Image 1 (cartoon, rainbow, N blue to C red):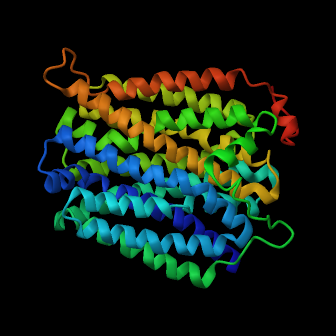
Image 2 (tube, rainbow, N blue to C red):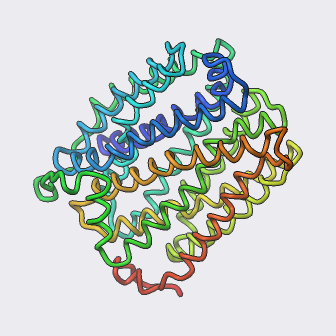
Image 3 (cartoon, rainbow, N blue to C red):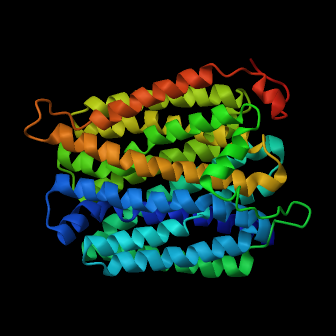
Length: 411
């Protein structure tokens, strides 16, 4: 029972991380315009700056926190992270200037280690052949949070632009109390790794892991795919406001529907798919659906098309747990926190680059002075990146799986 409760806690932590993101998405355009006094286009640029600042701090600190969890354990790292997550949302809830919002994002980014530490925890309790499937549980938990977050955001938005932030802080703190009583430690003396500063940073850790055969290319693919995928959380609310005039409630409902589909795909469908396909083949299938979804969003001009494309785009999420599971099986049991910290750091680096690029493209293509009006241009840019990912994965050889210990290969 305690093991089940601890698994519920770590998956709930993932869901809450997702809820914390989704619950504020519906109000972000209005909130930033409220505190800055600018236009929607200006607010989109500020949103990019806020996201980039959070991600920059996460990029710097995630490898350190991941390595600390390899040394001191998953439990203290997760609990401390949840505490600072609560503080971050409280600061954003009382902020009346853009710069105070920025301070909250910086603080949150420093301690935003939950994805890396949860990933390491799942790796600790999983057999090698089960890792890809169990990483799917993380994706499903994220999907559940993606459902609840926008719905809660839409509900709390009725009480003002600040209410969702206070709700997110309360939810994170309640989960902290839950984890304090149910979460055991999975890092034993047998797998405990000495903390080394030369590897506990994004550059040193990445250079070390890149020395492992074939892992370097997989890390590159992971990075550029994340670059494409971030168009959804970064731009969706601004895109639908500009293209269709949506309000926070409709934005929340649509994101909730997308989250349900991701939870179904990563929590259930991927377990069936991986019984018939290798991780490489699963990644290829996921990339194909993701590319189709990106292209569709690039050109849609009617609201019903948004919902029609959601099942297609959600199937693209098959690629993520297959990719994570493969990489996790290619490193030692004492390196899981280090690997997950590096992956979280790379995702953060993407969120430094992508929001500025995506919101910049959006700004250009909705500007009345620009000769082409195309709000979906960032999605088309993501489609091009997705094609590059597909080509790189296609060129990977199936012998890669022999290195990671996979048996009964299906060519």
